[in-house]
Image 1: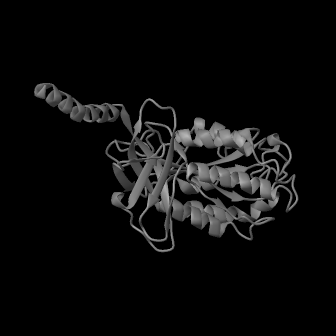
Image 2: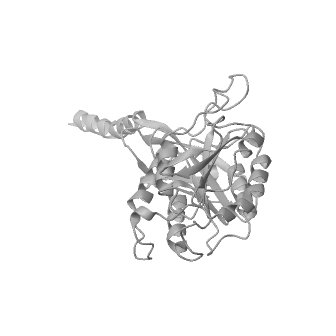
Length: 322
């Protein structure tokens, strides 16, 4: 009898270990791009951050800053914007030229549900920021030229352009897979979802774009600017509401929240540049058998908020070295 009790006790103690081992065996390292909102300069470490996957606390395996040469930045301009956007081209050029050396940039115009490269001779990402800036032009200013900015975003993140310079040299100290960022300049209105009324703000196309960006591991940032087909107020609430939804779902940010056009894009471009510079790669284990998992990060740093995607795909790698 004593022997039987001892055997059962050992089995009971061993079973949780086996289960934990099995769960660990089924997990896969997964990465997400995150950033920190704080009134003061912060230098977060892994011990400062708590990760919840599917509402369960998960070990944070690593937290590392995105290196200055480790980013790909895609600027997507709605081709239906009012032509007054031409007055902002110098600000956009200055932003591109101020990015750190090694940053790869891409400029594209959102047309008919897709993104058309600004430069036909250089259709991919490039570290030649001045050459990329040469492709900037005034938007066509035709109402609804993008069809829907969310169609364009979905297509772009699913068909991410290659580096124009080809694969990085293994001896160049360049990451093999760079962190990807998108900045959209658009009014954010989804014409395919019908009315821009406050009572009609549940677009399946916006939701699909959020999911596509989450699967690709891409945080989406945006600056609101009016479309040629809308007055200074019409659609402002609807468009910016959708842009906030995209930002919150992917870990990005939506800038402006006024009516009409911003006085200048320069301060928002600076905020975006700072967000890139202050982005981190969080690595944590995720159940490899799931298609998508929910994600929530928090920090013990005072007066600091963590921006992170609301969902990730198991096995996603957002930054890697050769």
